[in-house]
Length: 281
Image 1 (tube, helix red, strand yellow):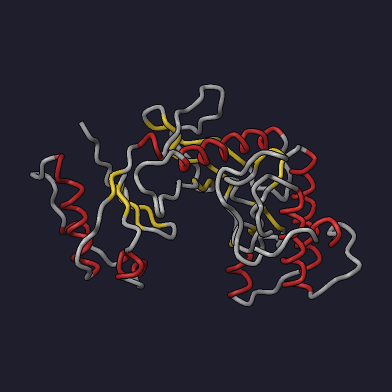
Image 2: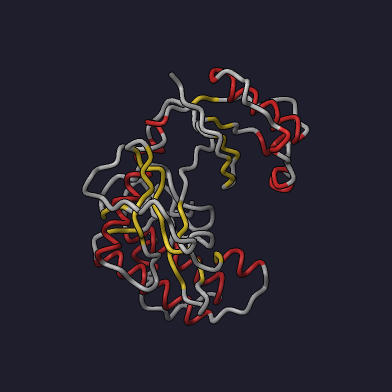
């Protein structure tokens, strides 16, 4: 029998348990504000059969948001949450508020592929490596949440805000200090045999002291491995990247450096000859 979970998670998409509507933002651009104002006390599902809970809930939310309906796509748990290998670290039942759990994104999921579960497991395994080899400029991994024998997401230490939000708020930034920390974090990953493959302004945080802290490791893989999914962020990505390669990080770092600091021809780590064979993504 199907189990319907009524959690609402909003990380750039609307996610209701194992159901997802990929077109929500097109019909309701102000979805974040409207969801915050929804009064769930007006929803009574106590007499609703299990088989129709999801559709009843979706109809209630659609009405509150002023859209016609949700086209719900059922996604089995095994396509989102991988099985928990017992040798990995599991967080305690009481999780400190300083921890942040990264929930899997199901934006655009067709209800068939296993890529989401694969990337969750990959990021969790990378977290285990980082836990044994910590670095001040890389988010600290705390373990993963496990429900019904499956990983629901990895936990990381929280930081203040992303570089993107920091710049958007026009907050002061010690550019030299920030870039040095970012480079140190990337070098540490490379020395462990891994490449990040997805550096951009939304995947680097600043802590309370203005230090760069790298997050989001679903594309972080051993050098030479085929990337699980097409990756990178517009403006920070090498065209045609298919494999985990230090050049991906070097290119993205150069783009960020030039954005924050302007063109720098004397920077030693980022060598144009190393990445010149690729086109911008």
